[in-house]
Image (spheres, rainbow, N blue to C red):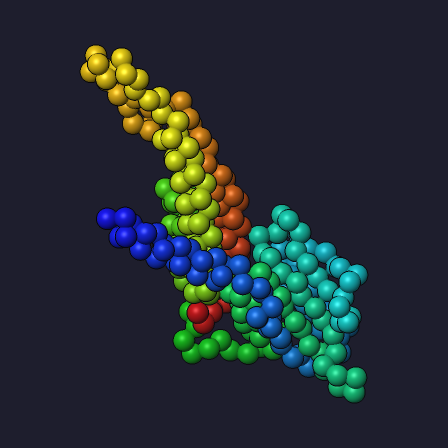
Length: 253
């Protein structure tokens, strides 16, 4: 029995380590997305600013341009999450390049498709489809059950997520719930009042289950942590998706 228990614990440990490696692998394995646009950086920059303002005006110009001529970043109140750079393709080239970086690979791909359709007038891919609206009440309601369900709802048919983005987000919430809620549950269970010798002699009722423990409130507090964090993320995901959907662009997932 002890051998089987040890073997099961080893398998769980391996799964958790694999999830951690995938969840926290460095973003540098992705190179971002780039779009080449006809015209000089100043002209392209004006067109880009018009597009960014149309989507959401809560962004700012960053002086640290990393060698590019212009750089724009979202503010905290902007539901999108981006770093967008504008520069020249080369010293002798008259054309410009736009580089998009985001913590999510899905947003990088989404921005590239938007820029291609808006600035290059490039038709969407033949398999691209328009977006349908998502609902805050559904996303937030699922979040109360489990943050992973909320992530699944927001990522379904949304250009904001790739399959990897969905897996990473779900895994992070799963691990946080497992560590926080699991730890709080074990603590409450270990601190249940124990029956003494007189209780055994009198055949008194036991200490009850863990939910009757004075420390059970810690379990609910631990559950609240991930749900509060996801509540903000869910608002951003739903708002960004719906803002994008209202312009009628089509996306290839």
